Length: 220
Image 1 (cartoon, helix red, strand yellow):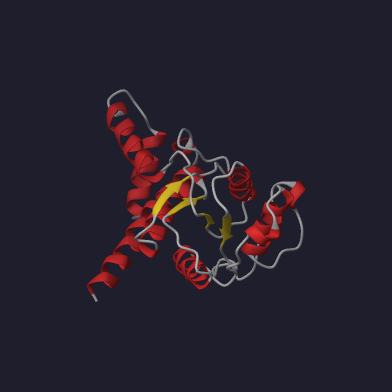
Image 2 (cartoon, one colour):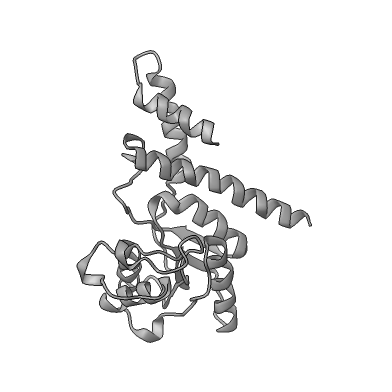
């Protein structure tokens, strides 16, 4: 996969007329796969994978206030790689503070945007996307909330992996992905910066690993 990243980066940085069609096709195929987006539909719950990005929770709050769901379930303790919540990465002064978990941060943003406390379900133990989805399913089950339809709010470049993961843990649920652009990375510009290329191709790599793990678990 590292070789694939280097190859794509080289093509993107060295475009010429001869390779323009091939480059455009590769970029389009990757974009179409990674950047999933649906129109929101009335659902039973809005799901938020663990994140320190305020834009996601703001989007979820907007959807709640528009009547798309009765509950919002932000998930997450913090990423296992970091071992703590990254307060220093909060980019909007309206939402700064000293938070211990992804859930605590997300719920703070939700409440500041008009979501009542009793509409916010708590999952604050997960440390990766798969756990976000698995533990969220358990919380909903424990609260006897039947989820036939759900809205998934996530980072735009995380949309495909988040969808794959939540579908795995919510196989009987229709999931609508309503992402937010974060970190300046969008479907239109990801291939124009090293950060965007690394993020998106990193998601491709993770999609392969997650899907492989899910398939193996289903065979056992």
